[in-house]
Each structure stands twice: as C-alpha cells, then as structure tokens.
Length: 208
Image (cartoon, rainbow, N blue to C red; front, side, top):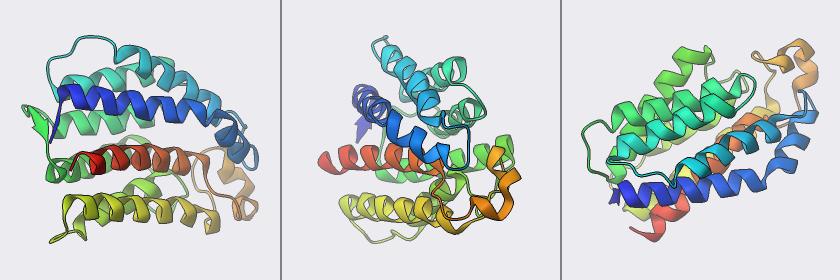
C-alpha cells in the first residue's frame, strides 16, 4: 500500500530520474522536434522535486501539488499534458488514504481519459498517449497476477508502447509537419512517460 508519505517519496525519485535524463530526451526530440523536450521535463520536475518537501495531507494533495508544479514551470504543450496526468491521478484518488495496485489501475485509466480529452491525442498518434494507453491495457491484462507481476507487466507493455512510436507518423505537435519523415524515431514524450512508469513500478514492486 502506498500512503501519502510513500507517494511523496515516489514522486521525488521519479523527479530525480527524469531530471537526469535531460540530454537523452533533448536528443530524441531533436530528430523531429525542437530538441528542448528534456529541458522542459527538467524544469517541470525540478519544481515537482521542490514541492515534495512541502507538507501534504492526502495522496490526492500530492498529485495535485505535482500537477500544479509542472503546469507552472514546464514549457510548451507538455506542461498541460503532464498536469492532466496528475489531475487524473488526483481525481481517481479522491478520499483515499492509501493506494493499492488496483487503485493505480484506476489512476492510470483516469489519467488516460483526461489526457486524451485535454490534448486531443489518441493511441497511434505518436505521443505519450501510446505509452500511457499501453500501461492501462497492461493493468487490464493483469487479473490473477501478483502485485509484483502486475507492475512488471505494466513496465514491459509501457516500454513496448513507447517504442511503437518509432513506426508511427506524427499527427500531433511540431513533428506532424514532417509527415512520413517523422517515422523512424521514438517520440520523446512517449519515453518520458515510460521513464515515469518505470521508476514508479520499480518502487511499487520493492514494497509489494
């Protein structure tokens, strides 16, 4: 079970990991974008990292604080998108004192719903929605699995979702203007989403 304190720790560790991947994410983005995705992620999650030192009462508060942090500091379209993810997490966590694996399943489903509504992207559009959708599907495929097996499956499917964008033509963002030339490169946002899920899954598995 993940209570408020553990969740703050998880968000802290996720933020540290994403901040450290600035150069890698900028390089990915440079193939078909402006090359600044890593900088935007770094700015947003530095604010998340700072905000996790504040006192909070509930798991919903933690997610809300994270959403506010990225919305206030992350440039471009990615800020509102990541804010929408945290908003979905917060909405699904309302009134809960802790999160079990089944609650995370609901969190990711709600986050996907909110992101698709906010950004207008669908699976197959070569965005982080492809990673997020793969994680949601993995949770649905996990009936009968132990918690550790669930998170391992979610990690695997999320990576597959991110890597699948390499074979997609972009339909959203600056890359859409490149049409078929956007094919052949993994979407930077999809990898950011994977790294988020990957770090979360590792911490959740260790505490199962």
